[in-house]
Image (cartoon, rainbow, N blue to C red; front, top):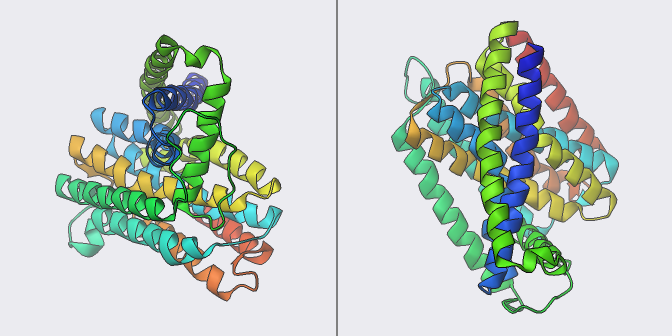
Length: 351
């Protein structure tokens, strides 16, 4: 069992490192081709932030361990929406912007509801077990394509200037943070980091980072699946439970650290936008691609898991309209955190 735990931890570390290398290398290449920070943020950085979850999902599907794929995404999203957002509110209450209230959080709710409809076939189709089949996977990918198209359109309308030159520009703090603004700012930060690194100016080094990052992702994904499967076998846990707890929390821990740091610096809106965007991509693209590889039979993932995920999105949509600061305050933060603790307790007892 100790060997499985070490392999799992090393795999998670490789996933995080690999995603960072791929993202940094891709940003450098994109800058060389004069791609704007807006597009870098919405594509390269947005997808890069969810790459560890995506790799685990697809790798689990290829290795015929579908419960790991579905459980990892659902567990990671619940961790982000309940615990991470809850702790952010406890650390420093913040106001949810108008764009987030009227546009981004409703999209989050739609994405989580789409995953519920796609995965809970026992409830919605009267099937004998839950499965995300290929047609449901295609549906999720189509929704993801429309989501990206909408983000690019809305970002283009709200953007005051297209930063498509090679000049270094200061990272701006958007007036009305949302998913697109969060990814845009992250794109600007990545671009500035790339410009300030002398090695990354070399074309060969950018491609080397991409190749090294992809290799780390492949090896890390294999190790995570092997470690999680071995751990489940040794301690008598289901693969779904390992995915919902150990793997999901391990992949989401960087989000917790990053979000708390951003909150302490007064950038809660950007951190929240990144969390919401990542959860949408996880639910739509990661599960969609995995379901195309193999139908994702997830007997151990049930109604409680799906309703917790959708309920978390619904609460984040509701709270800004009923709280005094029109956002996430300490009371709502504590409530979200307690809900996560209750969900994890149920998951552990269920086995």
